Image (cartoon, rainbow, N blue to C red):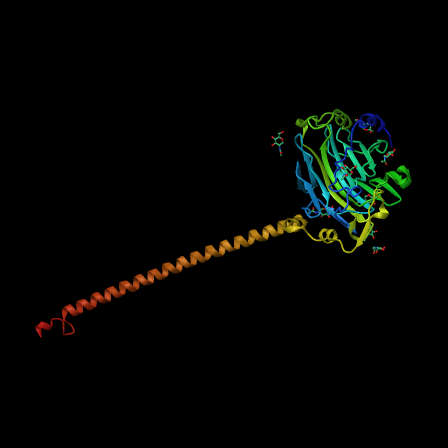
Length: 367
Ligand SMILES: *[C@@H]1O[C@H](CO)[C@@H](O)[C@H](O)[C@H]1NC(C)=O
Ligand SMILES: *[C@@H]1O[C@H](CO)[C@@H](O)[C@H](O)[C@H]1NC(C)=O
Ligand SMILES: *[C@@H]1O[C@H](CO)[C@@H](O)[C@H](O)[C@H]1NC(C)=O
Ligand SMILES: *[C@@H]1O[C@H](CO)[C@@H](O)[C@H](O)[C@H]1NC(C)=O
Ligand SMILES: *[C@@H]1O[C@H](CO)[C@@H](O)[C@H](O)[C@H]1NC(C)=O
Ligand SMILES: *[C@@H]1O[C@H](CO)[C@@H](O)[C@H](O)[C@H]1NC(C)=O
Ligand SMILES: *[C@@H]1O[C@H](CO)[C@@H](O)[C@H](O)[C@H]1NC(C)=O
Ligand SMILES: *[C@@H]1O[C@H](CO)[C@@H](O)[C@H](O)[C@H]1NC(C)=O
């Protein structure tokens, strides 16, 4: 079932200056020259957050906890001000991203999985913690937030207790939002203000959780939009990201803004072909921890048993060796004593013999 109830919150939202995503850009290429090139993904990569991830590929903001567990990466809000996020260091220019995740519960808590570019094009999935069967899809072109008719929400399955596959399939012609194997929404290029508001510049992947219902840090409008005031005593609130499957539709090594103008058009983005560092990095295991985690439980148990076995064998060997040595020592000591006793006895006998003059030269004065 599909519903379009976003207009109810649109009135409140219209008061707000900016979108509710975790939007940020260091260098906006539409009005700044010399914005740095962006590393591309340039191919397919999968990321499993049940094992440690590369901090070269995923940059995190450390305000709040992101824990690595068997279930995946767990983003937690425990107190006012927490908003843990990660963003990919690599970008895609048209592509497909599937995020396998569970959204966070909690009034006012917003989970999000978005694609965003440096000139603030954006494609969103957002989840309100107050409603476990609702999901919001949204998009922005060049940071234009003047109109709030772009968001659409859908009533779907339980998004907080079950993992689901949220896919954005993005080409220059259209954007599709897929919930598991069902397409919820399609936006055509021309439907986005004749393409002007259509997301079309290299985007990275940003995942995070924040508290729109934190009355300390937000306007009443945001709190209302977020579904109400967050009661942190009900927390902690966590969202879990298990896997991400990303496909860049180009074979780029980097994207460049050189020659970009105010149009923000995809035709003005320079695609520099080559083997991307992100792909190389994504395909190698990350650290000992990662290789360790990549092993099955059985293999891990096997290795631990092996190490313990080795230690035990060493201990036994050392013990046996010591006992042997001590025994040998005792034997040697006894032999030595016996030898000494024997020599002492011989010496005594010799002295006695000499004293008794048995050999004839004992009392030489008597000669
Ligand atoms: C560029 O545009 C953005 C968004 O309109 C604005 O926030 C920023 O201040 C501008 N930067 C410059 C250098 O003009
Ligand atoms: C990426 O994966 C898709 C299927 O998910 C496949 O069709 C495509 O050929 C792959 N591309 C590359 C460059 O491996
Ligand atoms: C969670 O927040 C409470 C205070 O609100 C604090 O006492 C506690 O240590 C925090 N726990 C973690 C894991 O940060
Ligand atoms: C959840 O959201 C949907 C649509 O956005 C709405 O129809 C439903 O009433 C909401 N449920 C609750 C419990 O707020
Ligand atoms: C922003 O988008 C609205 C409609 O969504 C449009 O009316 C307006 O002209 C756009 N602004 C710019 C600067 O393109
Ligand atoms: C996620 O959903 C998309 C769209 O239905 C599908 O193509 C893709 O294979 C799914 N991925 C996984 C890992 O289930
Ligand atoms: C980059 O590679 C793609 C696919 O191999 C090709 O279509 C495109 O023309 C190349 N672009 C440049 C600038 O070489
Ligand atoms: C992590 O998840 C992937 C994909 O779901 C799976 O293939 C792999 O075995 C898992 N690794 C561990 C250590 O659980």
